[in-house]
Length: 231
Image: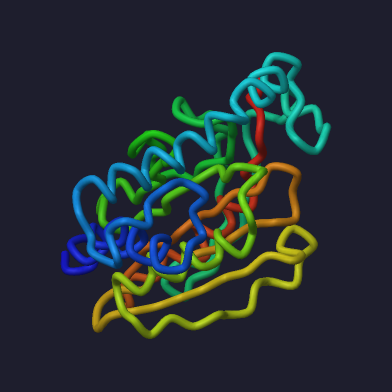
């Protein structure tokens, strides 16, 4: 429960960092590092505006059945076998193709997990039996500076625990040039993957527990994310 409360602090902290470092191109410099409701709202508006600027192009790709890599996502099969580890046990199950109602992508979802809209431009893929074990999915604006994405993510994790470390990503081509960061508390682990090796970058942040390790299951589902809608 503590990790959820701490995570709600991230937006305020992010507003302070963006103000102090000048990473935002909007006029948010008047707070001198002080967090206010207006700062939070302005940061959220800036992020949403950056995403909305790309919506028309994404909608055109969705209508044509093409993702940002010019792959025919409409040809994706309705099911796919996924191999993963859960609490140290190797498993293989059939995942079902799901489309986001909130963002322009689809992915394969394992049994026992649910995909739902969390807020504008963010979805939650959560464990059905425990909603506090979940993965947040965010499609990122293509015109956002990568350094800004990295700094924002680090600030978000620091809201959980200020000790944030960069971890190695898997050696697969999917993760080429991508970055992963992780932090933890006595009970929880939060890991963020910033996926750059696609035309439409995205980020997924995994919230799991030290005594209930579902991280690999989320990671394997996250690898199936593809921009564009399937038929």
